[in-house]
Amino acid sequence: NPTTSNNLGEISGTVTFVGQWPATGDIQVSAWASWPPAGPPAAASEVFTSGINSQTYKIEGLSKGDYPVLTLGWRDPANPQGALVLGVYWANADSAGVDATGMPNVTPAAINISSDKLNWNNVDMKANLNVVP
Image 1 (cartoon, helix red, strand yellow):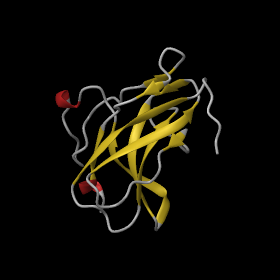
Image 2 (cartoon, helix red, strand yellow; image 1 turned 90 degrees about the vertical axis):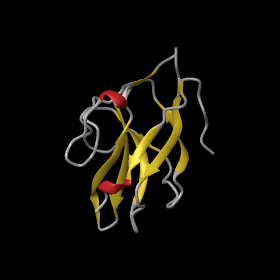
Image 3 (spheres, one colour; image 1 turned 60 degrees about the vertical axis):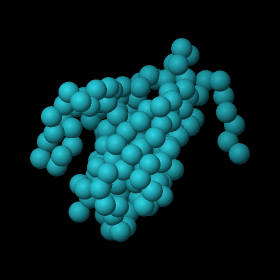
């Protein structure tokens, strides 16, 4: 069992999935230490269960610091190095236009894990499953 510390934070919320679930591949939430995302994520949630259109997630054990972007990603088992972004956490989705894939043109909302706020709850996102081929 992993031990918890008063110095570690977590991010949790609900994901609403829109569109048809892909036949293969894994979908999960990832927290990134840079924007744009590069390399492996700093941390990730458990993989979501296919076919359920509203699910909760939790990313635990986060070190204090800035996480400039939280993404919902799908990974193709045939191409594990490439991943598609299905959604991003942002502050105000209603004010953004969309790009050619239907994803919002937004700057992600950063999450800062600090002594003042270790736990970020209700970080809700929407996953656009229609971008998966």
